[in-house]
Length: 205
Image (cartoon, rainbow, N blue to C red; front, side, top):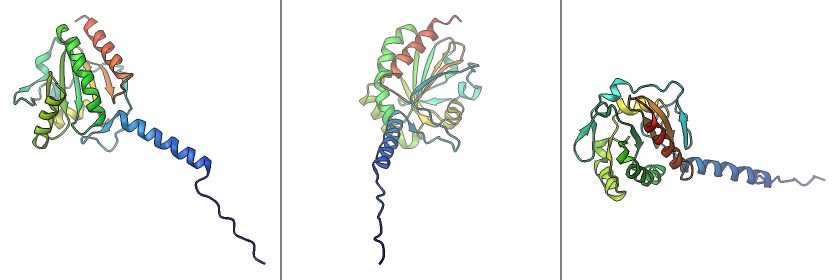
């Protein structure tokens, strides 16, 4: 007489719980940052966080001197803002966390503009294919600061292989990167950005 086969269930309670935990973590990370089209193979994305750079490096010459095309048809160079605190944001029109962050940046710009902070938002997209989408973004989200594009020779050195966006940089009056933020958290990021700008403005030099 043959013994009846015992069929083991694949979806045990433990496996269901484990699967839900994994899906939740994936959803949380996906909500905080996107992978940029400039991402390299060794990218290690970091969810919304502010990180202090140990050596506070200066911006490379190729970044400072690059012509940055703007959505209004003009162009700027970061070198022209020597002596001012600069807030530089890398983003893209297809990035959900970027869309959620930009209204906060608009508010920060209104708050710090009178203090001399220059805010610049640069899309990591190809300007040839995203010009109208970026201009529509500017109109829709009332982006009243400089908005344009970061060419590869600018985005690459700034992102340093960390391809997640949004990325934001608080740059001192003498061109040092004081703070770098990767990703966006509605609760944590805005106060961190505000504090970083206040500290940059308080620096002598």
